[in-house]
Amino acid sequence: MAPDMWSGWGIRTLSADHKSFNPYAYQLGAVWPHDNSIIAMGFKRYGFHAEAAQVARAISGAASYFQGNQLPELFAGTQKDGTNFPVQYLGANVPQAWAAGSAFLLLQAMLGMAPDAPSASLYIDPILPPWLPDVTLSRIRVGAHTFIQFMTGGIPDQVALGNYRWLVVALYWALLIGSFVVAAQNWLRDPQQRTGYHAGVFAMRLVAAGMWYLGSLWKLPLPVSGGFQSWMEQSVKYSSFQWHSDLMHVFLDHIGVVGPLVYLLELSFTVSLMLGFMVRISGIVAGLFTLNLLVSLYNDPAEWPWTYVGIILTHWMFAATSAGRSFGLDNLVAKRLVPLRGQGQPLNRAIRWAFSAA
Image (cartoon, helix red, strand yellow):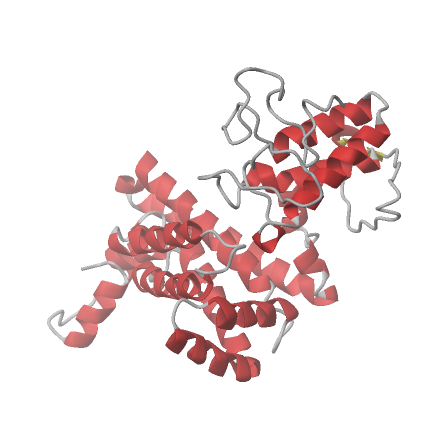
């Protein structure tokens, strides 16, 4: 690689010999990790194995200087001299998906992995450099769609449960079938439901329910799972407020009780959203639950807080718009199945509100 393009931390976007070169400029000499990973794949394809490994070594070495080993969107293309370190571009996105993904593509380049999904085959041609003498990969799948694995108990969180995974798979299938049965009843009984709006809200509920179902899996096995314990420890460490950190520490000390309760809570969100049952209540509670996640992990460098903001607003939107009234049990109950009397009584008013009937 020519020295005018090679910084020692990676390949620059512009030659250092060019009159417009500026190592701190966005496209005039900075180093982009994802560009470098694509270049490494090109080196591998044309037989330049040492060069591919050289790029991988440089990018991974640069990552070690950034907080949490997270690669930024780009960093300065200054020359490595043994005494300096890579400088993050001012305003670079961290974390960023394509920067994070470059690590996997660099590994793929060194391993010479070429998946062929239609034939369910994986071709490999590994040539590892001295600084990476061995690599172990597990649970590599080629050909089967992740959704199919999810629906048949094949994703890692399900497989880890052993034979008990069939119970959680059966539960999801039952809820999914139930949700379509309820939707069909709405379609047949209530002509006002036959709109794109109601179908769209129904689809959004199913997606949100799937998120809660997947989230509940790493609370298993009960009473304490490794994933949930790790999350609790992160909450104590990265909480936005000391009083909240102290509270989460109390929960961590009693994780054997908290774990099953959190699992049941997330499972209740799944049931409510899939069946459209009491969505006003579950939407409010799910939003508050996610707000706790936002406060807990706001300072975690591996998290993007706006993800939680989006989840909060989505569920509060479900509550505000009575999303259970779109192909859900809430609509059937409000219009058909619960002929409440004495509507002025507080209990009946509360029930009607919960089912979005008032």
